[in-house]
View 1 (cartoon, helix red, strand yellow):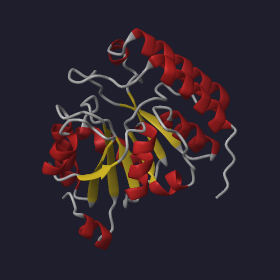
View 2: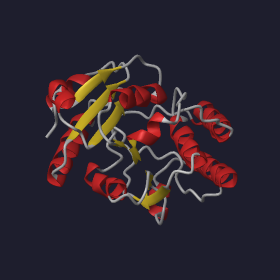
View 3: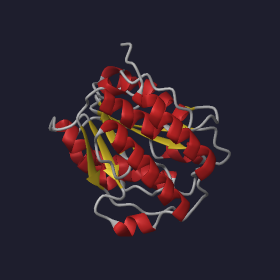
Length: 243
């Protein structure tokens, strides 16, 4: 079940699901409800943290009505939101997914199972692995950017990646704590992935379903955010762990 703050402090949480949102009132309620239902079926202790990135709509209120714990964060970007969620998370494992309905919460067991079974430390749910149809759902400029980021990441890390920018992931909390994350925006996905590979973590990709958003507006700026992602890939590769 979804837990209150008091309960989270008393009980050991197996998984923390972190959902960053900014003006997603049309979808966040359904995403949280389906997340709760999925994890209840798994019979493990969990919490759902919705990090509200200073939404101007009712996203936070709707998330609360669906029994999510809402973390309020200034409108500083996805990287700040995820980092705030990581700081609050109590779980041994962390799952991240987007609040726009593009990911299916019912597939959380797919990404989480590899951590529970100690097969991996970091699981990326890839929209594009074995799916030409999913790639066609992404705007052309975004597809070009994704291929560039995938190629650069593969070149410098030695691991072939089909979806470096996927927001649907499962990661060991202990690994996140070692990453010293600094990203402000969408580049956080690349920063996490490259740093995990640099630390010799067991990283795998698995295919997931994907639906292009049909409500709301994407906050991604392909040019500005693309430049930040490229910088993050390179700077994360030269990252020196200090802990």
